[in-house]
Image (cartoon, rainbow, N blue to C red; front, side, top):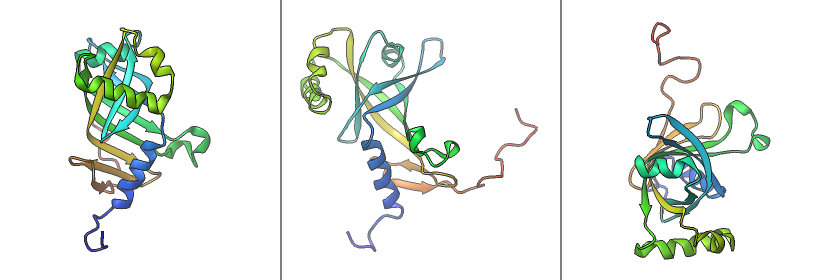
Length: 179
């Protein structure tokens, strides 16, 4: 790809993807029946732009995803690696979840990919019927590299990157009189 045809901020897009791929698990925020947010975590695999989690009914997020497919995923830099706790590198994705039934054609092939990534633990968990496979399709994302380095990622493959520089630090978008 020549520099003339290279998308602006493509280096941010590539860094965003490398950052996500460096994680083995994700923090998930889901919504329960009472419309209350709940956060948890799960081991995660990314394949063809989608995320996959194999989670137990003992976890609230399993039933939450069955009832409401909205989920937010958070990949965050470990505290010990961060230059500053107020500016930890992080990627947040808005997603829609799809429950993949055991009878579906893609269930077995996806489970094979999970086993390749996570090893023999998947063989142990695979026959447990209280575990469910979900595919999480990204709708949009945010990526923060540090202070004043926040980006919005949109589009089919999240490759449309915008630097969020409007307002900047020190200027509130909200009036002090607003609640």
